[in-house]
Structures are given as C-alpha cells and as structure tokens.
Amino acid sequence: MPSNKTLQPVLKVKVDQLFLYWLSETPTQLLLKDYLRRIKNDDDGVDASLPNSKMLHKTMDNLSLSPVTSPPSRSPSSLPIGPSGSPRSGFTPRTRKSIGSRLAPPSREEPRTPILSQNIPKFYFPKGCPKANVNIDAIILTIENTFSAFPNERATLEDMGKVAKACDCPLYWKAPLFYSAGGERTGYVSVHKFVAMWRKILHTCHDEAAKFIQLLARPSCSYLEQEDFISFLQDVVNTHPHLTFLREASEFHSRYITTVVQRIFYNVNRSWSGRITCAELKKSNFLQHIALLEEEDINQSIDYFSYEHFYVIYCKFWELDTDHDLYIDEQDLSKHNDHALSSRIIERIFSGAVTRGRKAQKEGKISYADFVWFLLSEEDKKTQTSIEYWFRCMDLDGDGVLSMYELEYFYEEQCQKMENMAIEPLSFEDCLCQMLDLVKPQCEGKITLHDLKKCKQANLFLDTFLNLDKYLDHEQKEPFSTVQVENEGQELTDWEKYAAEEYAILVAEEAATEQWNDGYDTELNTLETDLVDEKTYGIDKRPYLDVPSERSQIDLGEYEYEDDFE
Image 1 (cartoon, rainbow, N blue to C red):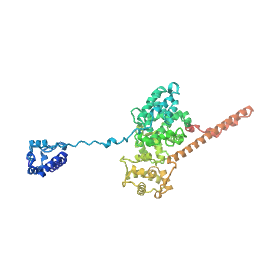
Image 2 (cartoon, rainbow, N blue to C red):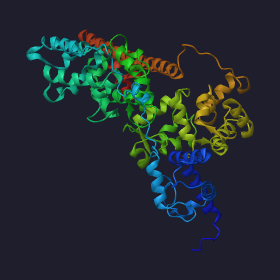
Image 3 (cartoon, helix red, strand yellow):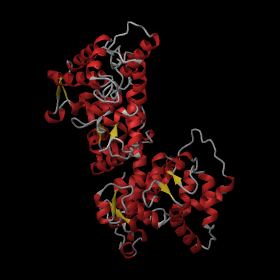
Image 4 (spheres, one colour):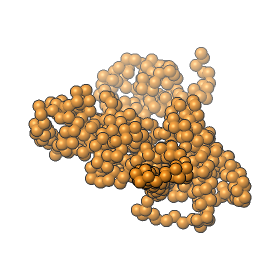
C-alpha cells in the first residue's frame, strides 16, 4: 500500500486514539521529560548518542504518524514506546539501546495493593452474624444433662420439649429438632447424634431464622418448600392443648395443615417463588408466632395458626365444592358471595396467572390451596400480597402495567351488571379520572404495581373493577371525591373483621341446627316414654302412630357436613 495514501476517517480516529494512549503512559512521559531536560540544559556533556534538538523536534512533529506502522489489531498495552527502525523517528535500534543503557529503566506501574479493603470487616452474614459471647460448650453440657434424665440417654418425640428448652429454642421446635437428628428412622434420638447435629448448627447458623431453615430444609437446601412444614405442623396438631377437638377428627388434619402452609407462604414468601429464604423468614413475624404458641390461645395467631380462620375458609370452600372432590371450577367459584365477582376476573384466576398447579390449567379447576389464596386476597385487598394477586390477574398482557384498555375491559362488565340492576353506571371516562386521581400514577396513563402499593386505598381501586357489591358499598359509604384516608391504628384488618363475622354466623347456624336436632330427639324420647306408659296402663296407642309429627319428616342428611367441624 502506498505510504502517502490518505487515511480513512475512521482509521485516523483510531490511530489518534492509540497515540494518545501511548503518550499518556508513564514510561513514555518519563522518556520525553528526560529528553527535554537534556535539551533545555544544553550540556556539552550530553552523550553523543542522544539526538540533537532539531532531530528531536522532527521526531515530536512526526510522533502522531508513527503508530501507523503498528498493526491495528494489537491492544494499546502492547504498543512499543516507539516504532524502532522507522525512518521518520530518527532513531536507530542501536541509538535506542544506548539511551536505554544510560537512562534508568522506566518503572512500570505496579498494581496498587488495596490496603484499606483488608481492614473492612465482614458485613454479609447469610446465616446470621456470629455472636462473640456464645459459649457452645456450656450449651452442649446443658443438653447432655437433659438427656441424662432419659432412659439410656435417648429422647423420644414426647421428650423433645425439654430438649428444645435446653437448646434455648421455642417449645414447638421440638419436632424439627427430633427429625433433624434422625429420630424418624428409629423413634428416638441418642444424646451423641443430637449433640453432633446441634453443635454443627451452632457453628454454622447464628440466628433463629437460619437455624429453623437448617432444621426443616432438605439436605443441601437453603430454603423451605411447602412439604417441609408438614411434620412440624402435624406435631402442632397432635400436641397443642387448644387443638384437642381437631386431634380427634383425623380426616381434617390435612385440611388444617394445608391452610396453615398456604397462609405461611401467603405472608412470608414475598417473592412468589414457592421457596422461603432465610431473608424472607427474618423479615416476617412467623417465628414470633411459633414462640407464642405455647403461651396463648391458638386463635390469637391470626396470621397463621388460627383454627377459627381455618374453619371459615374451609366452610366457604365446602359450600362451593358441590361434588366434594376438593377442586372447584369457574362455575363453582362464580357463586362466591352471591356472584359478586366479575366473570372476567374469574377467568383470569383460572388462566394460571396466580396459580401454580398443573391441574388448574389442564382441567380448568383450582385446588383448596389455591382457594385459600383467593379468599385471603378477596376479603382484604389492602395487603401487599393481595394487591400483587389482583394486579397479576388484571395485567392481561403481562407487561407489568395496567393500561387503559385493561381497565376498560374489566369495567365494561361492571357497567353491564349495574344496568341489569337498573343502576345508571358512571361512564368509563369519568370513572377513569377518579381512579387516576386516587392512585396518582407516576407515568400518565399507566398504573404500575408500585403505584398501587403506594396508594393507601388500593382496595377501592380494585373493587371498582372486580367486585360490584363492594364497589357499590364504597360508593354509598364515602364518595370517591371526598374520600379521606383515616388512621386505623390498631383496628382489625379487613380479613380479621370478615373472619370474625363469618365465624359467628357459622357457629350460630350450627348451634341452631343442634338445637333443632336436640329438640327433635327430645320429642321422640318423650313420645317413646308416653307409648311405654300407655302400653303399661292399657291405653290405646293408635292415635300417636297415625298422626306423625311434622318434624319427623326433616331430612337430617343436609346437616351432615356441618357435624364434621364439631
């Protein structure tokens, strides 16, 4: 290629860039400074091998073109100080060598040692920050003394309450401690196996959340799945003093356990991953509720273990599940709360937007576990999980934004229902203005999940598009234009109010049923007594047999399902 050919613009820019990089390197600057110092001093004693002033100026004039001879594919760090042997440089290889022999070799920059970073203390402890004042040997000695009181120093599941206290753990950690030490295989735990297991946990896990996950999780897992809670909850059912009545009805153990597991994941698993991590467990109040199980009524654990809440949830599901196969379809769910829900939102629930089971998507049904999530979200739309639940359902295209089209899609059915009820609906444009004023989205015309969570009245927004009864309720109580956010303080949540009201209704209905049945049985007993007396005294008994009581014709089978919850 001819040397006088004009460089292409892009190539020239690259050459200039490489030259600037070469010029900014420390060895190059040291060498040039030394040259300039010698020229400025103009000493007679300057080595003849050094270039004179004219030659150096000529060299400086041509430095910008010298990198052209270097292969463009080489990295900047591999560029030499100067292209040796180039006729433009004015230096010969020998001259370059002589200069290097008289000058101190330029010192290359050595990587700086991060001295300060070595002194930064460790700040990330996924299994808790170690405590300096923990005497592990003393804890182990206490445990060994506790085991010494058991026959052959072996503890059964019934003995593990004392062991849990020796480990400074809540009482209902006893089953996880027992099974983690291998007690399920032999029916007992020896002191040596337990001490080895607990010593390892004390050395690796330094807070309650990490210890609890280590006890319940499968080997090599750092998270908890739904199945991991079964043995722990079964022990709660078997031993808690306020669940004695449930203990006798073994067929409902699995229903109660399923309800509690779903409530645990509903409140704790904020990532919707189906796996509870140590970080999620720390942020929740679940471990505090476990500690309180031994001190108070189980119904006081309103977030997880309440039997009254389980009773309400399961009764509501039983009413919808007409064939009692523990699965309901769209038609069954539409009957909830007298068809208050929009059919379009019910379709979205069954579309898989908020369910994980394959059976739901394959057969168009949802399980009892899915119904627990639905009822918790439907009756309290102020919680973070419920807002996420309904946002997933309303986000038809899954783009993370509720568009005006999606809002109109759900509001259209609400308008049709209101017209059928002879109620003049608000136009979508007017409704939309109210909703945007209510939510105040950051991006105009688009409502994100963050916008809804930031809004203090997300329940009003969601009910407007999903539940006509609650929408009309809100509109009658307080108009949207004058809604005021009240400080609820320590008031009951919407779910707690709903559960308390429904439980009172269910108990009253069951009491009335029992009273009816008891009255009927009393009447039959009285009738039998009279018949015996009449037979004894020779009185004719045919009138009593010819005119049966009206109550004797009642079909008692319709109350059988309620008896299961006694």
